[in-house]
Every structure is written in C-alpha cells, then in structure tokens.
Image (cartoon, rainbow, N blue to C red):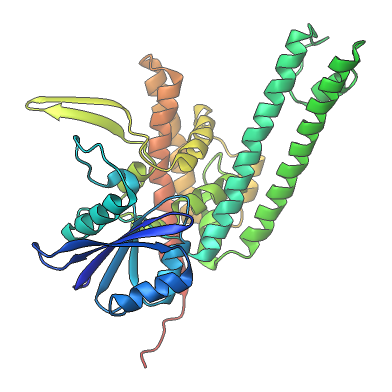
Length: 381
C-alpha cells in the first residue's frame, strides 16, 4: 500500500453513503463527514473536498451494491479497496450500530492495516459470473417446482405404474397422462407442469447464453475453462462456474490458500498442548463449494477415460491430461481409504473436494502462466 495522508471509510447503501476520514499517523484524527447521496456527482464533489485523489486511500464493505462504487472511484483516479465484511474486527461488547459508526470504524481499521480486501473482478468477468449465477438460481427454482409437483402427486395417491427414473422423459409422459376428476386438482397439476416447462426452457436459454458468453470471454479465462476440463467430472459448465467464481488463480500462492477461499478447510480450536479440528469453516465462496462437491462424486468410480472425457482432452496439451489422470488415481484411492475407515460419505466427498481444489489450482495456474508467457511483451517507451 502506498503512503497516504488520509484513509477514507465509506458505509455504502443503495441511496446514501456515510463518510469518515482518518488522518495519517497513529494518533491522527478520525472524524465523520456526514452522509452523501450514492451518485457519481456527489462522490466527485467529496473527492474534491478531500483535496483530490492524490494521497487518498478509500475502502468500503463488499455487499449488495456490488463494485459500481469501486469503478466510479477508479475512474476518478482514487485508490480503493473493497473489504471482506466478515473479517472486519468487532468488539464483543459493542451493541450500537449506525452508518456513522460503521464508516468511522472502517476508516480507523483501514489506517491500522487490520482489514482484508477482496479480489475485484473486471467487468467482463463480473458479467459472466452474474450469468452463471442466474443459471444456478434457475436450477434451484426448478428443484423447488419439481418438489411441489412430486408432493402433490403423493398427496393425491398417484403411484408409478413401473420403476422409472424421476423426471425422465418416461416419467414426464406418465405425469402428463394423469387426469383428475376434480377440476381444482386438475388445474393445480396443469399449473405445476407449466412452471416446470417454463423453468426447463429458462435453463436451456441461460445455458446457451453461457456458451455464447464464454466464446467472447478474455483469452486467459477461455484457456483456463478449457484446461479445467481435463479433470473428470468437469465439463464446460462446471469448469466455467469454477473459473468465474475464483477469477485469477495465480493470486493464490499455494493450493491451501484456494482451499481456504472456498471455505473447505477444517475449523480448529487449539489451546495449550491440545489441538482439535472440527467441520469445515464454510467461510468462503459457497457457489464454488457447491459445484466442487458435485464434481467430487465422480471420483468414487475407478479411474477411466470415458467418451466425453476423451473428447474434452483431445484438444488439450499432454501435461494437463497427465494432471487429470493423476487426479483420478489419487482421489479414487483416497475415496476408498476413507470409506474403508467407516467415514460418512458426505465427509468423504468433502475431503475429496478439498484435494480436488489442489489439482484445479495446478492446472489453472499452469494455464495462466503459459498463456501470459505466450503473449508478446510490450516494449518500453
């Protein structure tokens, strides 16, 4: 961090921003500057009031307002950091919370170097991430809609005439053939079916939009998405989700940092000579953790190269395919060992997912390094 004369804390909301300033030095004054509208013109006037962007260090909490304020400040030439809210120090006995106090605390802690900044994606990256998360939300809505219809059929006493997979084409054909004597029940089933059909079309539309967006993504991101598909269970959609949720993999110096970012590391309570570890912290990216554990179920099977995996690996470099093959052997063996010890399957998959992140980090950082090395170097002026 460059030497600054003033540290500014912003408590940002949709319509207003509470502002506080901490002067440099341990005993520098910390004061509130009141509240301004959350508009570009008001922010520009604030920066002018503080003497211009030179010598300012500004921070605000990550939240529902996103990174719009960050980009506005960057456009004005102000150095800004977005702070992880859960890592802001808090006093156990502090029971008063206001926007003014929050802004003052941000400014004071920022000056002391006690805040942790989050990685801010660029606009292309953020747009693709929003699209991927929209598809994830649609899948959750589809699951709820299917549960409603399934429970309705259960209450109505309808049973499958033969064994078939739920929500398969045969299952849906059977459901559509059901007729109820009571008009209200028939109307209910038609409505539930209409919602399921609507969500299926919505998901298909979003997945097509993701495919189109990936083609227009930055070259390094496209290379990472392709490289991750060397791993078993990581098709294009899963690889895209991981890539957009993590961002630039090389910002993690080692795999354990990425594991902590995903909230997949064990919690710990150690004191004196005792050391006790518990469940995973879950203090990380939940979207990344979800898709990671879905992929991890693939490694309960013996190592093999199926048709789909062969097709994905065909265009990839040999060294990435070797990492993928090594991951299959390592993770399947780990799965067998943990199951043989009697560990619950959910805990086994959690452990597999954590180790899988190590292979993901190895592939992604290698791809980023190779891609950066292949770019023409800019000549010094």
